[in-house]
Length: 488
Ligand code: NDP
Image (cartoon, rainbow, N blue to C red; front, side):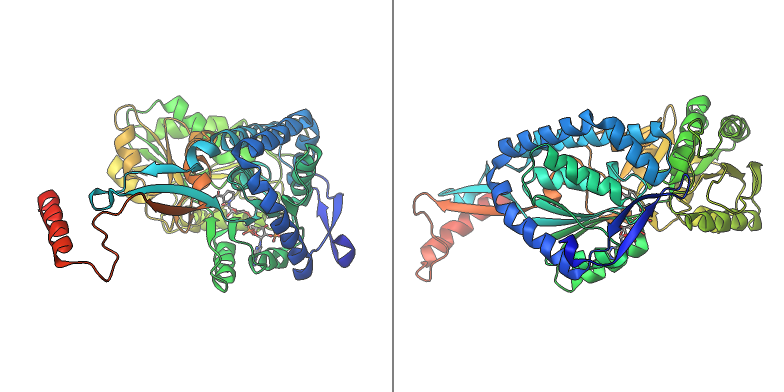
């Protein structure tokens, strides 16, 4: 396939600007070739059955573990994130791979359902059929964990996949494919195409049976528009502007620790990262003090000791700079850090008292910044948290009202007295509402996302046959009597 391609692009390391590797820019013909290969392989993969796929995916999992340090190095080279962060995302991805492989049968196997009072002569059953070939389009911020939420679940459900990694992390994408093949995974079941946005757009139009997209809301809309041309279904996992709520009875040390990790880990480039905090006025000052103390301990850099790496995508720095400037223009104060200058290694910034109309409060910043605002009550905190177009996840710190407040937050996931915990529980679905997208990865819902329901009835003996032109008024009367007795 690569022989057809002439154009190439370089994957550059944010750590030192060196070329990690050069990759082909696959065009529409290349993508079509990959999809055709995946389609041929999908038949055998499906007929392997749950047990066969479970074995193959377990072998892949073991291969990743056996070559862990190598994968960590590739993730660090392409994203610039600290090795510890790379290790953590791979650990979580492995847990998802194991869960999807071992739970696919229970979630998707054929099962009998009660046929209902009018159809007692039918045996009714429900199964989940793999779509065939899933196109997976992934971002660069968690280049292992994020696509794994689609790859593992789609493969376990019986599909072949064609993966288009971000142009910033193609070496991670091809590493995962090479590992799958090295572990004995059948050729063609896991294809990778590399390139820029146009390659992703070509994948949407290549006749795949479903597209699983993770990335920004704007690109999600473009993906959905492209898929609409052929009525190809999509899952959209888009951005977020997640808030953490601090109640007056919260454990302030735990809340501050969680806010700092949720905001600054991975240099803030986390879809479910904490970008806003609403703290009850009775604890606000003490809470800010604790967050400030912890923020001041952090340093971004390209050396191994730095807790934060540089921005993976250099132009993201411009968004961060614009949001900080806008926060200051909307009455905000810099509590820790200074307005970030040029370059892509940005030091953490803690902003307080920022006007709610600021882009720093309303739009995804995706950088090492945190806004902490004061609220008079938790009702106000909930209202403000919910007042953005995004609805991905959130976090609540409260001793007495955790569940109640969590239930009132708009979004697909909430952590009470911690942050981001839901993403590490493979049995829980992951996804959002509003500008954060729709559909679910992870958990049973995530497995079902990659299969379509098929209903089958089998008539066991004739009884009250309703679907005949020769139906008599007597049959209709009996049916009416049953329905009146049951539901009248
Ligand atoms: P982008 O939207 O820029 O890109 C996502 C992927 O789509 C990339 O592989 C990109 O390729 C590809 N792409 C770009 N243009 C098109 C197109 N026209 N058609 C098809 N595919 C295209 O997102 P980022 O990579 O910048 O990732 C960051 C975003 O991802 C943030 O908004 C973050 O919140 C979100 N995200 C959401 C998660 C979730 O689960 N909800 C998890 C992780 C991140 P290329 O890179 O080559 O341009």
